[in-house]
Image (cartoon, rainbow, N blue to C red; front, top):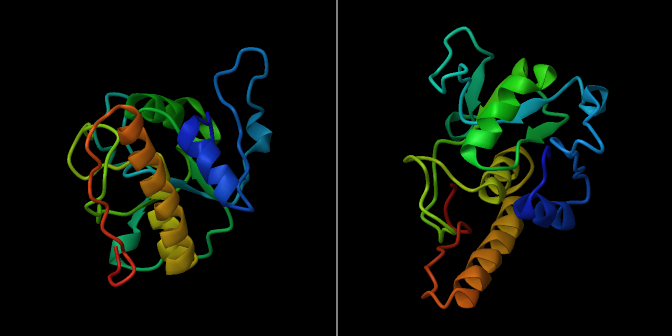
Amino acid sequence: LVRPAVPARLARRALANCQLLDYGDPQAPLNPEALPDEAYLLFPEALDHSGLPDPSGPPVHDLARGPAPGSVPHLIVLDGTWSQARRMSHRLERVARLPRLTCSEVPNRGRLRRPPQPGTMATLEAIALALWHLESPELGEGLLQVFDTFVEAYHRQCNKPPKTCPSMRNSQP
């Protein structure tokens, strides 16, 4: 996870093999060599600098349409707002060249805020869905429960009514 915010830190606590790499800290700049060579980027599409789909960009595979095209030894996740993640996906040269994995099926779950566009989801939710497809439904469901608990606690703290968060146990995302 690059530029870790709260969702990344929650993922780190829940996942044994999760490593956080901080991007954007002027006191400790990210060493690009710390990024693995054999990896996929969890990002919905290859975008150009204006935010439009880039037909000459790296390949994008939708996990909702079938298994990854090969082994996925490392999954890189850019944690931040959508605009921050897009900028990181361009500024980190090694990341910009990585093939992408995405999941087009967005489950109906509670949200912290309104998504910037239809079909988008929170970082922790995206990690959970990717792990659902790549590793096991149990691992994905466990992380989704962490996400649901976080969302519910947020709504309690803000005195907002809790949103319903249907389980994925009986159906694939």
